[in-house]
Length: 352
Image 1 (cartoon, helix red, strand yellow):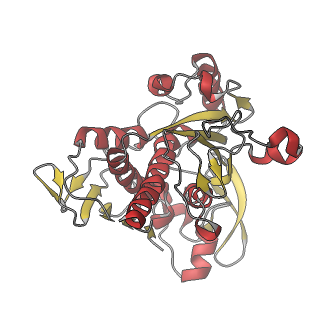
Image 2 (cartoon, rainbow, N blue to C red):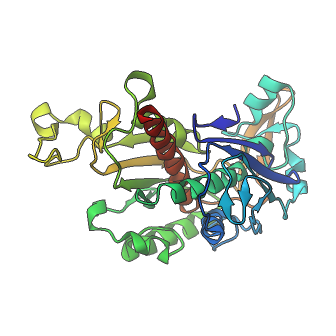
Protein backbone atom coordinates (compact mmCIF):
# COMPACT_ATOMS: atom_id res chain seq x y z
CA UNK A 1 0.00 0.00 0.00
CA UNK A 2 1.51 3.26 -1.18
CA UNK A 3 -1.58 5.41 -0.56
CA UNK A 4 -2.80 7.13 2.59
CA UNK A 5 -6.13 8.93 3.03
CA UNK A 6 -9.66 8.61 1.68
CA UNK A 7 -10.75 11.93 0.18
CA UNK A 8 -7.41 13.69 0.61
CA UNK A 9 -5.09 10.98 -0.72
CA UNK A 10 -1.35 10.78 -1.17
CA UNK A 11 0.23 8.05 -3.31
CA UNK A 12 4.03 7.95 -3.28
CA UNK A 13 6.90 6.31 -5.11
CA UNK A 14 10.70 6.17 -5.11
CA UNK A 15 13.67 4.75 -3.24
CA UNK A 16 16.36 6.28 -1.06
CA UNK A 17 19.07 5.95 -3.73
CA UNK A 18 16.94 6.07 -6.88
CA UNK A 19 16.78 9.07 -9.19
CA UNK A 20 13.94 10.71 -7.29
CA UNK A 21 11.07 10.28 -4.90
CA UNK A 22 7.66 11.81 -5.42
CA UNK A 23 3.93 11.53 -5.22
CA UNK A 24 0.44 12.27 -6.48
CA UNK A 25 -2.03 14.13 -4.27
CA UNK A 26 -5.75 13.71 -4.98
CA UNK A 27 -8.70 15.47 -3.37
CA UNK A 28 -7.31 18.99 -3.24
CA UNK A 29 -10.12 21.56 -3.73
CA UNK A 30 -9.69 23.96 -6.64
CA UNK A 31 -8.79 27.61 -6.21
CA UNK A 32 -6.41 27.22 -3.26
CA UNK A 33 -3.55 29.71 -3.60
CA UNK A 34 -0.43 27.87 -2.48
CA UNK A 35 2.51 29.36 -0.62
CA UNK A 36 5.43 27.49 -2.22
CA UNK A 37 7.97 29.02 0.16
CA UNK A 38 6.05 27.59 3.10
CA UNK A 39 6.05 24.14 1.48
CA UNK A 40 9.81 24.34 0.97
CA UNK A 41 10.30 25.60 4.53
CA UNK A 42 8.56 22.47 5.82
CA UNK A 43 10.86 20.30 3.68
CA UNK A 44 13.89 22.19 4.99
CA UNK A 45 12.84 21.31 8.56
CA UNK A 46 12.93 17.62 7.64
CA UNK A 47 15.90 17.47 5.26
CA UNK A 48 19.18 15.77 6.18
CA UNK A 49 22.41 17.66 6.85
CA UNK A 50 20.70 20.58 8.61
CA UNK A 51 22.65 20.38 11.89
CA UNK A 52 25.43 18.60 13.74
CA UNK A 53 23.05 16.15 15.45
CA UNK A 54 21.49 14.62 12.32
CA UNK A 55 22.71 12.62 9.33
CA UNK A 56 25.17 14.56 7.17
CA UNK A 57 23.72 13.41 3.85
CA UNK A 58 23.37 16.60 1.80
CA UNK A 59 20.04 16.93 0.00
CA UNK A 60 18.38 20.21 -0.93
CA UNK A 61 14.99 18.42 -1.01
CA UNK A 62 13.77 20.89 -3.60
CA UNK A 63 10.26 19.94 -4.70
CA UNK A 64 9.16 20.30 -8.32
CA UNK A 65 5.43 20.38 -9.04
CA UNK A 66 4.36 18.76 -12.30
CA UNK A 67 0.57 19.09 -12.42
CA UNK A 68 -2.59 20.28 -10.70
CA UNK A 69 -1.44 23.89 -10.24
CA UNK A 70 -2.02 26.86 -12.56
CA UNK A 71 -0.79 30.37 -11.85
CA UNK A 72 -0.08 29.39 -8.26
CA UNK A 73 -3.56 28.02 -7.58
CA UNK A 74 -4.81 24.46 -7.37
CA UNK A 75 -6.97 23.32 -10.27
CA UNK A 76 -8.81 20.54 -8.42
CA UNK A 77 -6.98 17.84 -10.39
CA UNK A 78 -4.17 15.57 -9.22
CA UNK A 79 -1.06 17.36 -7.97
CA UNK A 80 2.05 15.51 -9.11
CA UNK A 81 5.47 16.31 -7.68
CA UNK A 82 9.10 15.15 -7.69
CA UNK A 83 11.97 15.51 -5.22
CA UNK A 84 15.28 14.58 -6.89
CA UNK A 85 17.86 12.54 -4.97
CA UNK A 86 21.13 14.46 -5.25
CA UNK A 87 23.60 12.90 -2.82
CA UNK A 88 23.41 9.11 -3.00
CA UNK A 89 26.42 7.09 -1.81
CA UNK A 90 25.36 3.55 -2.66
CA UNK A 91 28.86 2.19 -2.05
CA UNK A 92 28.29 2.76 1.67
CA UNK A 93 25.95 -0.26 1.58
CA UNK A 94 28.01 -2.76 -0.43
CA UNK A 95 29.16 -4.47 2.77
CA UNK A 96 25.59 -5.50 3.67
CA UNK A 97 24.56 -6.95 0.30
CA UNK A 98 24.36 -10.45 1.80
CA UNK A 99 23.97 -9.40 5.44
CA UNK A 100 20.79 -8.71 7.42
CA UNK A 101 21.20 -5.66 9.65
CA UNK A 102 19.72 -6.10 13.15
CA UNK A 103 16.33 -4.39 13.66
CA UNK A 104 16.08 -3.29 10.01
CA UNK A 105 13.62 -4.46 7.37
CA UNK A 106 16.37 -6.35 5.47
CA UNK A 107 15.34 -9.82 6.64
CA UNK A 108 11.56 -9.36 6.33
CA UNK A 109 11.73 -7.69 2.89
CA UNK A 110 14.07 -10.37 1.60
CA UNK A 111 11.83 -13.19 2.79
CA UNK A 112 8.60 -11.52 1.62
CA UNK A 113 9.69 -10.34 -1.84
CA UNK A 114 12.78 -12.45 -2.58
CA UNK A 115 14.69 -9.27 -3.37
CA UNK A 116 15.73 -6.12 -1.54
CA UNK A 117 17.38 -2.83 -2.37
CA UNK A 118 20.40 -2.56 -0.08
CA UNK A 119 21.15 1.03 -1.14
CA UNK A 120 19.97 2.94 1.90
CA UNK A 121 17.16 0.47 2.45
CA UNK A 122 15.43 1.38 -0.82
CA UNK A 123 11.70 1.86 -0.27
CA UNK A 124 12.03 1.20 3.49
CA UNK A 125 14.14 4.32 3.96
CA UNK A 126 12.81 7.30 5.90
CA UNK A 127 13.68 9.36 2.82
CA UNK A 128 10.12 8.49 1.76
CA UNK A 129 8.82 10.81 4.48
CA UNK A 130 9.81 13.89 2.45
CA UNK A 131 6.83 13.06 0.21
CA UNK A 132 4.54 13.15 3.25
CA UNK A 133 5.84 16.57 4.27
CA UNK A 134 4.89 18.01 0.87
CA UNK A 135 1.32 16.70 1.17
CA UNK A 136 1.15 17.81 4.80
CA UNK A 137 2.34 21.32 3.98
CA UNK A 138 -0.41 21.66 1.37
CA UNK A 139 -2.99 20.26 3.82
CA UNK A 140 -1.99 22.89 6.39
CA UNK A 141 -2.77 25.63 3.86
CA UNK A 142 -6.24 24.24 3.17
CA UNK A 143 -7.17 24.19 6.88
CA UNK A 144 -5.22 27.23 8.17
CA UNK A 145 -7.48 27.78 11.19
CA UNK A 146 -6.48 24.41 12.66
CA UNK A 147 -3.14 24.91 14.40
CA UNK A 148 -0.77 21.92 14.50
CA UNK A 149 2.40 22.12 16.59
CA UNK A 150 4.74 19.22 17.28
CA UNK A 151 7.93 19.30 19.33
CA UNK A 152 10.53 17.00 20.86
CA UNK A 153 9.37 16.13 24.36
CA UNK A 154 12.06 13.61 25.32
CA UNK A 155 15.43 12.21 24.30
CA UNK A 156 16.31 8.99 26.08
CA UNK A 157 15.55 9.59 29.76
CA UNK A 158 15.61 13.40 29.42
CA UNK A 159 12.03 14.68 29.51
CA UNK A 160 10.50 18.11 28.99
CA UNK A 161 8.49 18.29 32.22
CA UNK A 162 6.42 21.38 31.39
CA UNK A 163 2.82 20.91 30.15
CA UNK A 164 2.25 22.07 26.60
CA UNK A 165 0.05 24.96 27.86
CA UNK A 166 3.18 26.50 29.40
CA UNK A 167 5.21 26.34 26.18
CA UNK A 168 5.77 28.91 23.47
CA UNK A 169 5.54 26.92 20.23
CA UNK A 170 7.26 29.73 18.33
CA UNK A 171 10.46 28.65 20.11
CA UNK A 172 10.37 25.07 18.82
CA UNK A 173 12.62 25.80 15.83
CA UNK A 174 14.91 28.12 17.78
CA UNK A 175 17.26 25.20 18.51
CA UNK A 176 18.46 22.18 16.51
CA UNK A 177 16.69 19.57 18.65
CA UNK A 178 13.27 21.28 18.23
CA UNK A 179 12.36 21.42 21.90
CA UNK A 180 10.55 24.68 22.85
CA UNK A 181 12.34 24.94 26.21
CA UNK A 182 15.90 26.27 25.92
CA UNK A 183 17.26 24.66 29.10
CA UNK A 184 15.91 21.20 28.28
CA UNK A 185 16.96 21.54 24.63
CA UNK A 186 20.57 22.18 25.61
CA UNK A 187 20.65 19.00 27.70
CA UNK A 188 19.08 16.99 24.86
CA UNK A 189 21.64 18.25 22.35
CA UNK A 190 24.50 17.35 24.69
CA UNK A 191 23.07 13.84 25.18
CA UNK A 192 22.72 13.22 21.44
CA UNK A 193 26.28 14.42 20.78
CA UNK A 194 27.58 12.20 23.57
CA UNK A 195 25.75 9.17 22.17
CA UNK A 196 27.00 9.90 18.65
CA UNK A 197 30.63 9.95 19.81
CA UNK A 198 30.09 6.47 21.25
CA UNK A 199 28.98 5.21 17.83
CA UNK A 200 25.55 4.54 19.33
CA UNK A 201 22.01 5.93 18.88
CA UNK A 202 19.17 7.01 21.14
CA UNK A 203 15.38 7.23 20.95
CA UNK A 204 12.88 9.82 22.09
CA UNK A 205 9.33 11.14 21.81
CA UNK A 206 7.52 13.81 19.82
CA UNK A 207 4.41 15.45 21.26
CA UNK A 208 1.84 17.03 18.94
CA UNK A 209 -0.86 19.55 19.89
CA UNK A 210 -3.76 20.33 17.53
CA UNK A 211 -5.86 23.38 18.38
CA UNK A 212 -8.99 25.04 16.97
CA UNK A 213 -10.36 21.68 15.85
CA UNK A 214 -14.07 21.86 14.97
CA UNK A 215 -16.48 19.59 16.85
CA UNK A 216 -17.57 16.47 14.97
CA UNK A 217 -14.51 15.26 13.06
CA UNK A 218 -14.13 11.49 13.07
CA UNK A 219 -16.43 8.55 12.50
CA UNK A 220 -17.66 6.02 15.08
CA UNK A 221 -16.58 2.36 15.22
CA UNK A 222 -13.80 1.66 12.67
CA UNK A 223 -12.86 5.16 11.51
CA UNK A 224 -12.33 6.96 14.79
CA UNK A 225 -10.26 10.14 14.64
CA UNK A 226 -7.71 8.87 17.14
CA UNK A 227 -7.47 5.52 15.32
CA UNK A 228 -6.64 7.25 12.04
CA UNK A 229 -4.12 9.51 13.77
CA UNK A 230 -2.58 6.45 15.37
CA UNK A 231 -2.38 4.62 12.04
CA UNK A 232 -0.67 7.61 10.44
CA UNK A 233 1.87 8.00 13.24
CA UNK A 234 2.62 4.29 13.43
CA UNK A 235 3.40 4.39 9.70
CA UNK A 236 6.45 6.57 10.41
CA UNK A 237 9.78 4.76 10.32
CA UNK A 238 11.12 3.91 13.81
CA UNK A 239 7.83 4.62 15.63
CA UNK A 240 7.10 2.11 18.41
CA UNK A 241 4.21 3.72 20.24
CA UNK A 242 1.30 6.18 20.10
CA UNK A 243 -0.84 7.56 22.92
CA UNK A 244 -3.37 10.38 23.02
CA UNK A 245 -4.95 12.23 25.91
CA UNK A 246 -4.15 10.57 29.22
CA UNK A 247 -2.70 7.60 27.31
CA UNK A 248 -1.22 4.81 29.39
CA UNK A 249 -1.29 6.99 32.51
CA UNK A 250 -5.09 6.88 32.32
CA UNK A 251 -4.98 3.14 32.99
CA UNK A 252 -3.74 3.90 36.52
CA UNK A 253 -6.62 6.25 37.37
CA UNK A 254 -10.13 5.85 38.77
CA UNK A 255 -13.12 6.95 36.72
CA UNK A 256 -13.85 9.70 39.24
CA UNK A 257 -10.36 11.07 38.56
CA UNK A 258 -10.40 10.60 34.80
CA UNK A 259 -13.82 11.87 33.72
CA UNK A 260 -13.79 15.24 31.96
CA UNK A 261 -16.67 17.13 33.60
CA UNK A 262 -18.61 19.56 31.42
CA UNK A 263 -18.85 23.31 31.62
CA UNK A 264 -22.17 24.85 30.59
CA UNK A 265 -20.82 25.84 27.18
CA UNK A 266 -19.94 22.24 26.29
CA UNK A 267 -16.22 22.55 26.98
CA UNK A 268 -14.75 20.40 29.73
CA UNK A 269 -12.98 21.32 32.96
CA UNK A 270 -10.14 18.88 32.19
CA UNK A 271 -9.05 17.30 28.92
CA UNK A 272 -7.84 13.80 29.74
CA UNK A 273 -9.85 12.65 26.69
CA UNK A 274 -7.33 14.45 24.52
CA UNK A 275 -9.97 16.32 22.54
CA UNK A 276 -11.60 13.14 21.23
CA UNK A 277 -14.60 11.29 22.67
CA UNK A 278 -16.27 8.33 20.98
CA UNK A 279 -13.75 8.71 18.17
CA UNK A 280 -15.10 12.22 17.40
CA UNK A 281 -13.46 15.59 18.11
CA UNK A 282 -15.15 17.55 20.91
CA UNK A 283 -13.59 20.95 20.20
CA UNK A 284 -10.95 20.74 22.92
CA UNK A 285 -7.23 20.54 22.13
CA UNK A 286 -6.11 17.22 20.65
CA UNK A 287 -2.76 16.14 21.98
CA UNK A 288 -0.78 12.95 21.52
CA UNK A 289 2.71 11.54 21.91
CA UNK A 290 4.71 9.40 19.49
CA UNK A 291 7.59 7.17 20.63
CA UNK A 292 10.61 6.64 18.37
CA UNK A 293 13.09 3.82 18.89
CA UNK A 294 16.87 4.37 18.65
CA UNK A 295 18.16 4.26 15.04
CA UNK A 296 19.09 0.66 14.22
CA UNK A 297 22.35 1.41 12.36
CA UNK A 298 25.22 1.67 14.84
CA UNK A 299 28.77 2.80 14.14
CA UNK A 300 30.09 -0.18 16.07
CA UNK A 301 30.42 -3.91 15.50
CA UNK A 302 27.40 -6.17 15.95
CA UNK A 303 26.75 -9.84 15.42
CA UNK A 304 24.12 -10.82 12.85
CA UNK A 305 23.34 -13.38 10.14
CA UNK A 306 23.84 -13.39 6.38
CA UNK A 307 21.59 -14.71 3.61
CA UNK A 308 23.05 -18.20 4.11
CA UNK A 309 22.07 -18.23 7.79
CA UNK A 310 25.66 -17.95 8.97
CA UNK A 311 26.64 -15.87 11.99
CA UNK A 312 28.81 -12.92 10.92
CA UNK A 313 30.12 -9.63 12.25
CA UNK A 314 29.12 -6.31 10.72
CA UNK A 315 29.97 -2.67 11.35
CA UNK A 316 27.63 0.16 10.35
CA UNK A 317 28.79 2.59 7.67
CA UNK A 318 27.33 5.62 5.94
CA UNK A 319 25.51 8.69 7.17
CA UNK A 320 22.83 8.10 9.77
CA UNK A 321 20.94 10.04 12.44
CA UNK A 322 22.08 9.36 16.01
CA UNK A 323 18.53 10.36 17.03
CA UNK A 324 15.59 10.75 14.65
CA UNK A 325 13.23 12.89 16.74
CA UNK A 326 14.47 16.38 15.69
CA UNK A 327 13.76 15.61 12.01
CA UNK A 328 10.55 13.74 12.86
CA UNK A 329 8.76 16.87 14.13
CA UNK A 330 7.64 18.13 10.67
CA UNK A 331 6.72 14.56 9.66
CA UNK A 332 4.37 14.21 12.64
CA UNK A 333 2.81 17.58 11.84
CA UNK A 334 2.39 16.65 8.16
CA UNK A 335 0.59 13.38 8.85
CA UNK A 336 -1.61 15.06 11.46
CA UNK A 337 -2.56 17.76 8.92
CA UNK A 338 -3.36 15.19 6.23
CA UNK A 339 -5.52 13.18 8.63
CA UNK A 340 -7.43 16.24 9.88
CA UNK A 341 -8.02 17.53 6.34
CA UNK A 342 -9.31 14.12 5.25
CA UNK A 343 -11.94 14.27 8.00
CA UNK A 344 -12.78 17.93 7.24
CA UNK A 345 -13.50 16.94 3.63
CA UNK A 346 -15.56 13.93 4.75
CA UNK A 347 -17.59 16.11 7.10
CA UNK A 348 -18.17 18.70 4.37
CA UNK A 349 -19.27 16.06 1.85
CA UNK A 350 -21.85 14.66 4.28
CA UNK A 351 -23.44 18.10 4.71
CA UNK A 352 -23.82 18.76 0.98
